[in-house]
Amino acid sequence: MKRAAIRACGLILAALALTVFAQEMRPDRAIKYRQGLMYAMNVNFGVLSRMAKGEIPYAKDAATLRAKNLVELSAMPWEAFLPVSHAGGRTKAKPEIWQDKAKFDKLAEALQAELPKLLAATQSGDPAQLKAAVGRAGDACEKCHDAFVNE
Image (cartoon, rainbow, N blue to C red; front, side, top):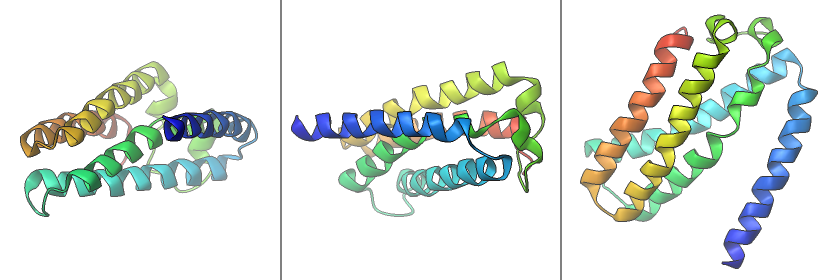
């Protein structure tokens, strides 16, 4: 219980710091910031995906850690999609993000809604539940990438 309270306080402080950070973020830094977060999400999701496919052994504790990381990381990159950041440096972000921000935000929210389900699946200890949850979360990622990322 104490650990959860400390973690919650840390997340609140981080959110406040990130809000100030986003207000002062230069376009090039916004791009690097969100790319770093997306990379970290990709690394964590990659481990879960490999477990779900049977490419590496399923390990409940490792899977749960990766899913917790994803839940936390998924709240962070969206503030760095500033209107001026589409031309602030090398980015795969399509201009459609800023032209249809409502759709972009909806897809980001859909991903964020799937990740707690993924976390619950990892905590179940059931590889079949993990596989299904990884599929749903992967679909949420793919929908956004298809619409808004130059791959």
